[in-house]
Length: 355
Ligand code: B12
Ligand code: SF4
Ligand code: SF4
Image (cartoon, rainbow, N blue to C red; front, side, top):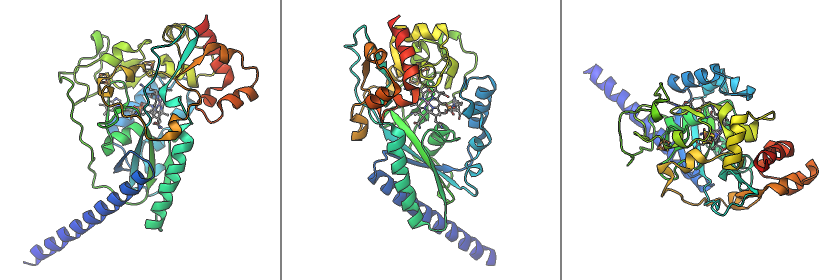
């Protein structure tokens, strides 16, 4: 009898705790949406070992290319290594899609990846993260938060998938039900307990499901199980440099995105040839453009900052090659993600396309 009443008390306690968590989550989500986040999800601070193992393998094979900062590994396993006593990671997604007008591309132009059309997302999203952190400080004055967008030592896609924002496709991208893969990710790590360990958004697919066989027998490993991709291999086949070396795994050394944005040195001939052919002067969207999950999901972003044209969809090669100084470059592209590559890099890629 006594045991029964203790159990009843315990289960009431659990129920009450779950209700409190659900209420807090719902309030945070409502606030996050009110300041412009399109997707919100919650996961535990410690990531499932499978993601960390994949990352370690990727790192071990040198697929981080020259991105030395990617070797900072301990924190990527567990967000409490970044923020002591962290319990939860709140993953946030923002749609950045706009239709691109590449069809009319002339010989003398280079294509800019969609994410770099307007203002740099790091600045815009950081501001929103600060607002959300301030809101959380008000609600939970004794707790702490730490936020990141892109640059932190955290596996953003792994947390996004765990929290239910979407699923990782064979192109490595988080694909969401509402916006396809055209989203930026960011997160808030917090000491507030906000999970019961369950993701939120379920994802149904119309892509034919079949046992996973990666493109044309080239790939021996099939990492993705229960994939939203089914038997599709469009991204793997379309990648002009074969940088998707296994489902979900990108070798940065072969990736046009890495070579045109991050690599400050020489571009290997094979990748340079592909850059010339595809005219990708800054970043690359090919493995997303061919994805059936992105077709018909292309809701134009409601965030006007991403639509304020700075770099635009394409850039005349001549324009880049005639910029004389870093000052002139800054004057033309201030606030744009192009600033990351710097004039020297853009000019050398422009020369590859013009050659
Ligand atoms: C380094 C980096 C790059 C490098 C390397 C890319 C790579 N795939 O690793 C380069 C410069 C090439 C790059 C390119 C791009 N990037 Co980038 N990049 C990053 C960064 C900083 C780290 C990624 C990382 O940790 N790589 C290591 C690998 C091992 O991890 P991962 O790619 O996240 O892969 C994980 C999952 O895919 C998963 N996984 C893979 N296979 C399987 C299989 C199974 C079974 C399971 C369970 C899991 C699993 O495990 C991996 C480890 O957790 C993140 C921001 C961040 N801090 O996370 C942005 C980020 C991934 N990039 C982003 C974007 C937008 C791009 C580009 C589209 C930009 C462009 N247009 O040029 C391209 C896309 C290229 C591609 N197809 O991935 C977005 C992705 C948004 C999304 N919807 O997914 C991020 C999240 C930035 C952001 N804050 O929005 N990027
Ligand atoms: S971004 Fe371009 S080069 Fe990189 S994996 Fe995708 S299609 Fe290949
Ligand atoms: S193109 Fe096909 S295989 Fe690639 S991510 Fe999309 S659905 Fe998956």
